[in-house]
Length: 567
Image (cartoon, rainbow, N blue to C red):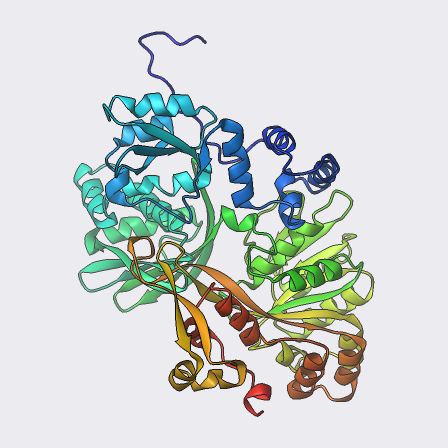
């Protein structure tokens, strides 16, 4: 329908998911990739039901920054990465919210001339939208990704506690609106968990961001029962149960915000406490490089994942990203010619064309019983959420032995202790030696904030004096180290975002022989190191020297392996 003078212009649609045809045209015209590489990318996209950028990113022919520059060049403007250089709230809010949202523009600099960012393909329209607000000023426009732009819009919002007060005053849909505001903020801040903690007179709302809890606001205790009931209804839990713990799940989707939430409710002396684990949409698209794997580890894991059978196990504490790593592998294997089936408790990330089974103890659908059924479903690849007992371990090993690729998680402190733990479950050593392909231990460390990152030259002696455990790993007299000074973007912590640190033990013939002869953790670790394995502490050291994190942060989450401390 043609637009009339009385009609208001519709808000421009954000380019949160760039069309393959547009990207193909931009990259080929700009000669960023060859025709042959683009053909391979299209074939991969068709067989894996993914965008062409997946292949280009995995093959390291392209990255987010290069793609952004290519699109901006095609539009005749420059590129700005708002995820690395987010504007301040004081700057953004100089542009009215209505204009920003309707015209898809963000004010990012007004120190002399005006610089705005847009995610549309019409830079002239973006300039026209703000020109009247800054008479006499030269206006320049830059292109940015829609997802990064969306994370800037919440800066227009008041503090969460202020919004709570406004919602309560309106006395309309109080509980639904408050829950929505909490979840939206958590998604945009990329929090991993939401905590609702009842106190004597109020309820504390906290977010876990980059592994650390931060207070987000408080709620009046009088409103909590309705909010709690809303969460229970959404998670399909009993609202009349107050004395027992309950677990459920919520699928949240509004606009560009989407997440799966795992809900856990437990009674405390002050009321029922709620913790919601967020499994954001952006986690579904993480590649092996995104989760922090080195190129060597990426190549090894890709080669092992393409074998027709065997076991890939990830080990680490709760919340260390084990399942995220396995799902990054599944994205490589999710081919139209392959039957991929998972059995999980709960199903964390929903992915198309993968058969996902939810454990249900109430109906007798356990990991073991479900796995027995799954192996009769003609699977090529099986993901078991966790190996936690002998029965599940036995079926998993037999599945890997009989022509299936099996992926699973395991609770262990490091990679070398996985085998002794499995043997404690009465799994035969010869079965492990012949089925295990690789064991991956991992932790999560905080990344240095890119916005306030600085470097300095320090002496090795001063570092060792401050942190003696580093002595076996540092040589020379001086080192360049990096840290975050602290700024508004990282809440003055100096850290923003997380990366994984990893320990890979590939079960080669030599490691397999050790499993058969001497299955102690020490013997396995020694054999693995002779085969070139590095501990996740050493992997973390590489990330420190690369400026990704700090020595202090590494020592917070990992210690040097004993085999090196004894040298």
